[in-house]
Length: 231
Image 1 (tube, helix red, strand yellow):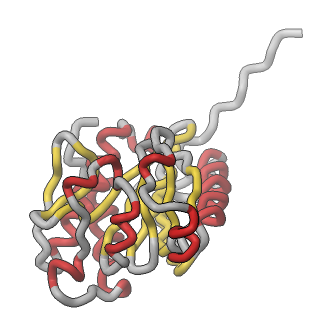
Image 2 (tube, one colour; image 1 turned 180 degrees about the vertical axis):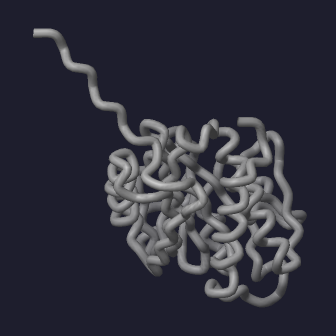
């Protein structure tokens, strides 16, 4: 019997101007990862539009595919005392920290439908964060040799992405007002000597999440629809 051709997966269920935003509050890292896996499958089947998850995590250190326990300076006893868990991540990169006061964004985006390469997508995330921070008078910039968003005071946003059959998961983390002491427990993204900062450390006061979120949604939507790098 001749083999039947496999059905082609839909590229997108609707127009690419749609970005569904789900504001989830405080979510455990493992639960957020499971939700991303579910949404990626739904996006592959064309059941949902591109989606942005906005949330915070309880204190957690995540190890990317190139991460190692040696990048965590603290002992298990110290981590337990600080209430910090350690989780393996399926994203690229090394080790990073997430915790309250840090806005995490997980875009579930169909790169094939948008004809975007992964490097172009990463640049879109970086530019979206830079544009959003500028609305609060925080100058930030790209580093052509290291992924993320930087300021004169150190790194203010980390980016680590993965893609599954053209659908993205994981994403970005912007330091609004996290506990910066927790970053001293790791070698963040292998660049401890560059330093880590936050919006609160730069401005001298916190930025309310409800004030920052609309800006990052708008700037990400702009970057995904008006690409600033070659397709």
